[in-house]
Image (cartoon, rainbow, N blue to C red; front, top):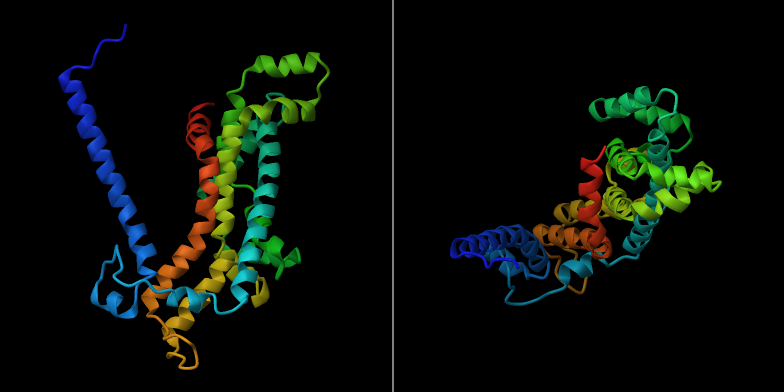
Length: 290
């Protein structure tokens, strides 16, 4: 029978929960301020530097952002890049991570050393641009996917998770006649769902926030992802005078910035709850094994 907690233990738990709740609230306040600020009127935002509950709600900032169909096209571009990029990255990362777990792979240690080396040093912006240009990827969506298709950090986490799987499973599969691809798709990947979900979320967030690569390699404004387009909206809002032909008064620059943050953040936040149950387990197990 489990003994009842002592008074000191219960008090420790109480203050521990209280402290963690306070820290969580402090972390949540800035985000709430941004969300509520995007619905705040011009006058209130100018009068109050910090807004949690607007006295009068307004959608002026969102009307300004959504005043053109261009933003929906940019959203479609970002969604497509995120889905395609995450799929390509997961395929390449899974194949490479599984290959590096094979002890009979020639040059395995050298390849691992080269992977770690890329985490400390890279070729630089100009050499990377020249490679992308010479491959004919300028003004293509692949320019935002292929240069970052494999992350060394994510690869190491997934490789460590694969190495933590029991060796007996692979040996049993070989006895049953499974080849390398059969072992990977029928045993390794199904048993690695927590880690795969975690790495997928890492890649999805990276592609969704893709900004610098789009500026570097995409000249066609019709192929801009949402992050680049929203940057242009903020620049336009801060540099242009109010358009009196609009049905609303142009909101202040700060309000538009807040609305931009909400528009660019909410889609990826919607995905997170579906992967959250795998996230903590996958990140922890993949980082401490191997």
